[in-house]
Length: 504
Image (cartoon, rainbow, N blue to C red; front, side):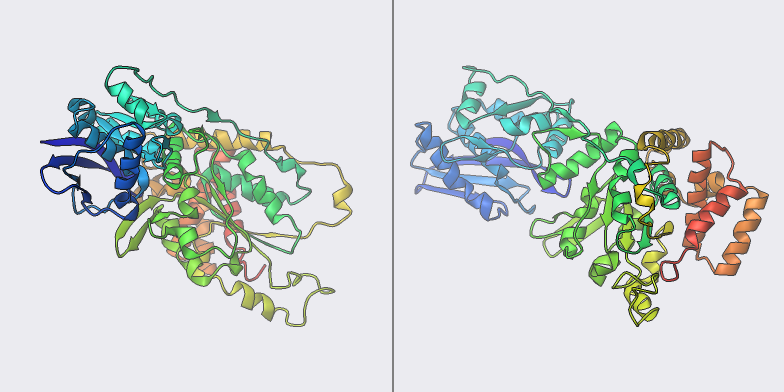
């Protein structure tokens, strides 16, 4: 007789159903696991044996075989402990077979039988809902999985609780969703003294999810501006929050099962490796660009990043997804992020100050920013110079719009885009538009077309640059509440596009 239980194997954020088959047959006593298990899965037999022993359940002196089907799909992670134990308990007649077959389970077992939380509970719950099964998981993972309302989630503290639940001795209550994480204290944009042009660029970037590159002397406020970007961003929609949380669930970053409506803000150090930025490693985990999905990736000191790391950003910026190809895995993660990059104009940072600049001006700036390739810079929609702030300005009171005021304008522009793309579920912002739809919504009036044509011819805009100007102009028009892209909108978009980071 073969007893069955079900679990999942993760491939990126996709959870593939795995059937755990258990056969207890006559023969020399043995406990084997087959079906491409990794080391952690193979060691499950010792954890399961010890957990059952702690419950005074002795394994029979027979041959126990666990098969993880499909056998050609790699199985990784300690979350296979609970389904293996559940299939074995069903084979021994301790829990009903139909109960085990109607459950998708995941969880790591301690030697005393307690269940340890694991990553990936949210994608597992999505998979269980598709198969119309109940999800069984550790109690600490229950609040995370319970956000999927289409399936019932049962959280157990130990294997003994699982047995008592399925035998009717002490049924476990369904898990409740975790708390929605509240936005903490966000820094106000009004705290930035001066830098009105940079603030305007930040507002445009937030409204249309455009990439922004800031070049300026040390201490001019580049990092300060980027740190205040979350205060003007719109909250995540329910669909975006679920997408982002699934990636964070696989990475093990969800705190106590809570889902946040705040957009991610990731700021990796410039010494980060390619696997850390793009994703990879032995289990092909998501990198910073995927953890910033639907949010912001802030890369300070951009030229200091390794050249191969920077070049790998080119395709994800265009496609919104990244495929991690390894010898044993091909995993695709979504990565629609807003790139905010900052750099000094040269290595010493004082190229604009004749009293403090080094003797190699302007060669030092050309060498330093020359580390950034033309194709990468062509993908950055907005490029601005952030000039130094005079010390006399620092004594002045805070001025300009508050983050709340700017955020209101950004939200109004985002609502216009939501209505515009209501029939296009794969589009969420102006930065995503291309092809015929871009021509339909982004083509300026006659004066705007004439100006853009002259600029494209005079400065040799690439086709990508031309289309990015149209997208930015469309966002500027949305901020102004204009149905049509007009000449002033095009002029402002062009002014941000023509600022070359190697010439500022």
